[in-house]
Image (cartoon, rainbow, N blue to C red; front, side, top):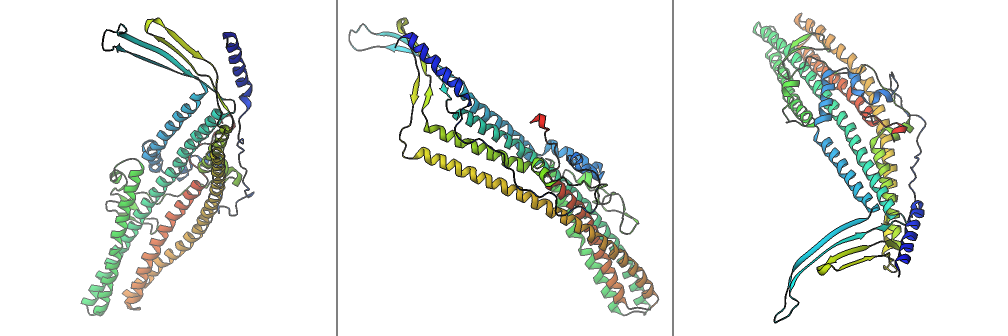
Length: 484
């Protein structure tokens, strides 16, 4: 083949490559459009604001500077979030590996040494050789383009995973912080009731000493006080465990937040309206509650807002592109190899010319690989659809839980107020000798139970609201259409 013929062939191959830039075998990805309801089945009991603008920083509705600070620190120091960021760097590098196949690869090699034979040979001496090698696959069928497409989608899925971790992290930090404040309030209430019951026990002992009541009253009073005191160790243990968990979420040692959150202060008890001297571990603040409630956006907006749905869609796109990668093996692969070698004595050799490789028979392996990629794509589609359904379920469930807990906290508030009033009345009757001691014991026990349940319910209202924000995908800002 003459040099002119070779040049014409190379130009023809390059022209075919350029013309085939729009040819990519395999199906193009189509973003699924799941069937979604027009509105949520349940609405929030109280609405204010308009959802998406405030949803990115939903925790600010609690107007708690400590909570704001904890979330800011978690965003910087959480180790799971740092791991996810490193995964993004890895996916970006792998995308670069895939796109590098668009370009020729050039390598250099060399060798040198001495040669010799036994006897009087005159061919003994030094030798050397140096050369360049080149390889360039012409992407006629879009195998490389599909590979880069898959890598792009995988990178985007990794970015969505990072955002999903942000959503979960902020919700976990806020939930554990609310749990800390709730446990601290429950300890306050138990301590307050224990103090009141100790006064009752002292009164009973005095009346027994005066011969006014039987020893049974004293024993029952001691029993009641001991039972209340026994409720404190589990609460304190749960408080320590929750603070430890919160510390780890911030990327710190388990005990790091004890000095910050477990402080000895004067506590204002919203259940009884009085200030109590607190032991270490009791807050000055009451259970945080949101000053406003974000109105949930439409279900259709959930697909754009929730990172886990966005990640599932990108994983589907990445897998769909692999069908094209496998399909390209049905067709001949054209490449342009070449070499240049300079050896001993200035001898130069070179080789440049097109090369074709076509797998004419593979025992059905290529067809099976295509079927495997199609099946994996079908599985990814079903996984996407399942992610959407689970997201809808989570939102509907959290809306229902929040609404019902709001009703419950109102009922418990009425019960706690009635129990407190009942204790006052029965205590006066007992002092006057108009009722037996059992009534007083029953009312003191009921007061402790009702106040404890009310505090726990108030905490649950806040954590249920946090669950709504998490279910809606709050905690990050979706890109605008121009940024996509």
